[in-house]
Image (cartoon, rainbow over all chains, first blue to last red; front, side, top):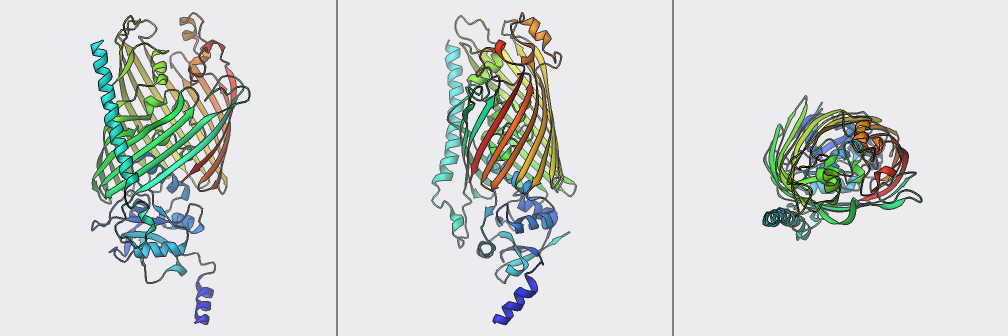
Length: 136
Length: 417
């Protein structure tokens, strides 16, 4: 067991810098286009195709994984996301995503909130959440 | 007199309707039984209540002329912004939003708490490609890139927004208005187009607005009239390029008092703003150009009844030179009357009483901003200014003693949650 986790850590964690989009198992989607993902994280799209409200979870603005996700999966910079969210919040025309403080909390919240979407580094993903592939 | 009372009560009526709507939105949101439902991960019916807020304290020092209080001499701490925003989304198509704002900034904003916005938003259609909806209540005016969130320090590129377009001296007229707004968005691979159009009643019952429109405080009252406002914006899917065109026709009337030297005239303000921005990882460039057309009619007063077009432009660069650090450099130009850019004609018209430099302002700004944490921001900036066109007459009652070349230093600490 110890050996297994040692290998696991040894093989996956270091320098591999992966980030994956994850959703609650109730979200009936295995693939999303990059544009759709941008609409979701830009807080412009409110529901999934079947009408289930989308719940977006993010790490704090200065979290390295947040920056990696924004740049790699959304092709935008974290400051642009922050500016877009602030425009929605402070003009009342939308809502901001829910900020969680750690990847553990992210996994817990995404796995227990129907309609949830978030992101995790490769090593933090388990069966409680579903990976969504993003078309380039 | 009866007419005056009647119009007063219509104004009050509109204000109270908005106030009630705004308060309802805010109270609903705040008193909702499951506030912070987000803290219960097992809840599968989050009520989507969100509460945010901000608080800032500023310091302004000038070598001549007063800005946001008595800023000459030791400087002024009379610049504070406190806001509380709440939104509730009981259904995915319906959102109630409200914001309370306390703002103190010299004689123009003397504190107190006002409803900055309070409205109901119904989202008829929201698919991956299209969005369409309607808003009712008091909404921020969609003008340029910054007006909608102009009182939130974190959303501004600098402590003071470029004054040529985002005048702080007539802010209440431009800030928010009461009415109905339709909005829509089209999302495609080549970019997103967002449009907003509103039929509204602007807020004209401020001292600042009265002085800006009628040169000084008057015994009668300004009345709000049906006005129109709209903005169309284009944004590339990665947000690199952003373009916007916004415009409005703001109408107001004057209800004279007995023995008033002014007749019941009308005022029409038609601004047109073009905005463009490019965003890269380390830097952004923003520019906005505005034409501002004013017309005063039937006041039976030669100095008031006139037509003029003002012009504004700024170019601004932001450089993110270090994580969480930003530098801003901006050149901002304002001409009150584009046919009298040096103000000489105005100076002669007023029998040399009022200075030519009160009709233009050229402001070179350099600022630094440090986002110490995602919640705390410290910023400082220096302005070198030629001209006083955007100075508030309330802070500078005697314009003949204002200085043409002056500088302004500002510091601000801001917190958000």
